[in-house]
Length: 561
Image 1: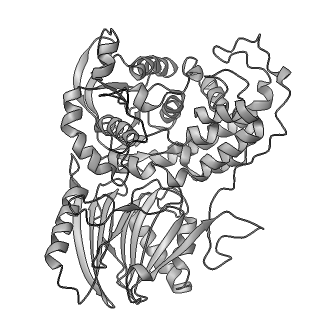
Image 2: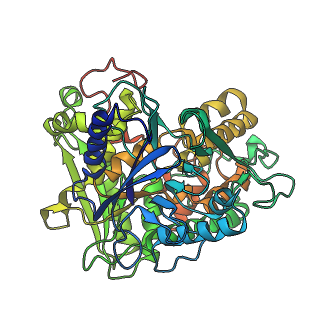
Image 3: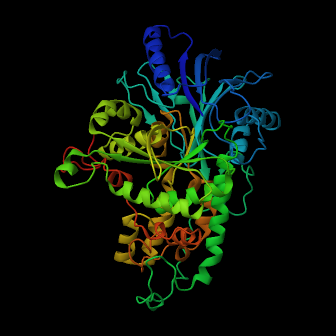
């Protein structure tokens, strides 16, 4: 993991040097202000054609046998790479540093095809990333986020024409706004152009069509998955859903034989995704290497149940369960504890269920209780991390993720409660399950109003816009705590499988809430032995952890902060 910051100016632009230095210092402080600090930090300044480029990188060691400082420089061409990502497929990394291996591959591809080597190389990469690459010979600066937007990268052009690219925003200078780099494209700044912003070329990711091979068309970037299959032919008549069948634990689900191949395939794809995301984490002594942000809901329960099958038996797994003191809710309800929130209740049940299915694993259940005074203390810092996201809902979700990923809390066992600080540098999160498997209330509404075709269109639309939503925001918030978020439901192989699976074998809204949505995942949970979790209805984190409407019931999620 690496915090990136880049400043591009015209070489003759000395009038704003003091301002540039101030902004650079602020970005350095923001990118490196992680609780445990970066493992390495370095800066490089180079002249490329008419431009002066300054690059900085703040590395958290998560790949390879030792910490690799960045920016990386190719020894023969002088090309420079800042890499904030993980290569989980497409290159043979082994136990080596993936940034170095990617730079080597870019150099090899450049030798063969200097015009399209960036597109060809990135089309092969599977994994989350944001990068900046300086091609000194061609006088180009490339930058991008991965096609699903799982890593943060922001940019802004100053009034002077200077350009900034960074993992996080510097909010001290508000003369121009930061924007999130669109994940559907790869960008190239042509330094030979008269102005920097006037010389930005764009190359768009596309779905494979007409048998197109990756790289068969020069500028095309081909996605590793297809469009969502909107076929609804397999949805049987309403009589197929027997209301008399007891579905409280999915034990008597009808037609399970028709669903079984899809259940088995989902298990296989998720296992591959989880394994590839944890195998490369460096050893951490006797400490935990990997944790789960844990509400006890079906998404995180399935991830935890699969995680325990791929980690060595002697490694603990941390389950971080966050709860907030909500002054407004405290006034309205009589609770044994202000932290007795919905996610705490389901989290405890989920922890007990995981201990039942794998009693030999050391499950560390951590209750991260957040008093309202701490929310007030850290709110402005979290708000800065959110930029350019800036709504009430962004804050409700962001502050929950920030405190949960921080991992400060109480470790609970059957006989004790002890103060605890999380050890994992990698956290598994369940983002992507709802969009692909029909977990949102709008999916049920589409079904209720207009039937299966409307539901299929809504799912396709949600999957299409995953890249434009909030994963960059979530990455900024989690990485601030020197942790890296990884999303197995958004692994390319999982997205490819779910996109080609007919709607009828992913969800069935004829069943009640807590059963019909994400039905394929619920059936997998039941197969894994998660009897209680498989029928829990979805609950958004801001409501489950009680970060929503802390001060007033009148605020709306879309209101600006």
